[in-house]
Image 1 (tube, rainbow over the protein chains, first blue to last red):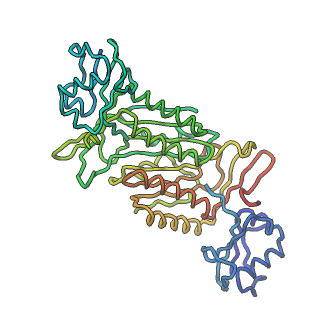
Image 2 (cartoon, helix red, strand yellow; image 1 turned 180 degrees about the vertical axis):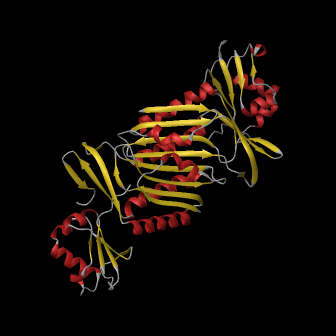
Image 3 (cartoon, rainbow over the protein chains, first blue to last red; image 1 turned 90 degrees about the horizontal axis):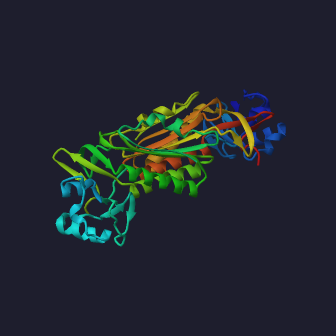
Length: 79
Length: 79
Length: 138
Length: 138
């Protein structure tokens, strides 16, 4: 599993990417959200925080597999 | 007075411009419309026919003066 | 509000961004009208445009006055071609530049709709065996 | 429907007409987003854009699929810049080309609205003494 951080989430976490050995046991997007929120409380201040699995938006209930590419998607602001 | 013909009205009348000596006695746009319709009946087949005096749209009731530039404005179709 | 208003033989669509660019504009909406290869399933060979030039420029300025009053715009452009135009050539370019995109879209739409309704420009369609002044007859 | 979808360092607004021109298109509507000199009265020095590139391209293609389904279009373009952008530089270009103008306007508006809502691109505003990720906080 790989976790990518974009925009303000990268600033909060302090790096663009985890190889996520420490999150090995998580089951769902919601579990990962809870773990990250606990470790980086500033994530909870964002207007919204979505997750993507393998380049597709994923709900909190979605299961995470060992080889997934996860991305944190803070509020988008293109255009 | 000068009368300008554009688009299909020029094709109907057969020239782009009259110096309009023969229309000397007309009082209003409506009078001119009647005279032109009588002389060139195909004008009556148009979807609409507006007139301009000195580059401004003019109602039939508008008076025409000796030095005016009159234009026949068939349905516009720019763009 | 700055404005660029022109009737010209040849439109240059490549310059429109720089013509509408403004330090206060976050949104620029542009509409290009072009010659289509067919009308009502008939193949078009080319179009011819003529205008009552002085009055057309006056009406285009009136439309610019109207959009300046209705929306908060930095720049507008209203350009129309005259003469013969081949398939895919541009015949009209209108655009509006404003702080936010809503105004630029609304003004741009108003520009083209009002130009088509009011400005004394006439289009003749040429087919292989016919020619027709557009909208002249019911 | 043909499509041009790109994330690039530098957008070329001068090519948009030829990119959207099509023999079946009478109407081409384009929206350019540009860097404004100020946001909420604060002077902007520049903007920085980053994207989750693969997902952004995927989402842009999804938006193109949606407009192809909703409207009868010949071509669409969706391009976004990444990296640092100065005042008056273009940051996004979207456009739609269709037989008639209604579809081109409606599709163009949908393209920019949906891009701003869905595509994973992030903008940071740089001021003389501060920098802010746009929309990150309530």
